[in-house]
Image (cartoon, rainbow, N blue to C red):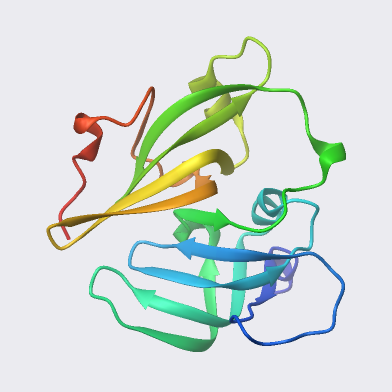
Length: 190
């Protein structure tokens, strides 16, 4: 138990319309697991959401709006423990991370599938690195910018623009360079 305390982060999510008088950065937080979407607003414990997600193995989400996928239905749950290994994607919202931590990168358009989700976006790598090899060498949670998420609900494909999507590379089924096209839309049925 003591060994896991440092790897678990308690995230108190706020639902829109609740006020709190604290001056720390707060961002929209939408986490996608295999069967649900958890959302709210969260205060960062690092300069960037990706750093926070990579620094901890478990997250206790407090007051999260939980939506069942694909069945639908939602409720605010007082507390839920979710492991990083259960987080397929996290959609980041709000201000970008600390400008002083940014490194000049080259962007590469990628498409990937993680379980029920298809993600298209820009992967950032340095210099002449092969973008797919660079993706494999990163920490588990990897940001894609200018990204979108697609998934099936019944016979329909839902498309959610995401801005920045942090992808758990350990849960990626496949990844390729290029644009989203018809062959990418082979999403698993619900």
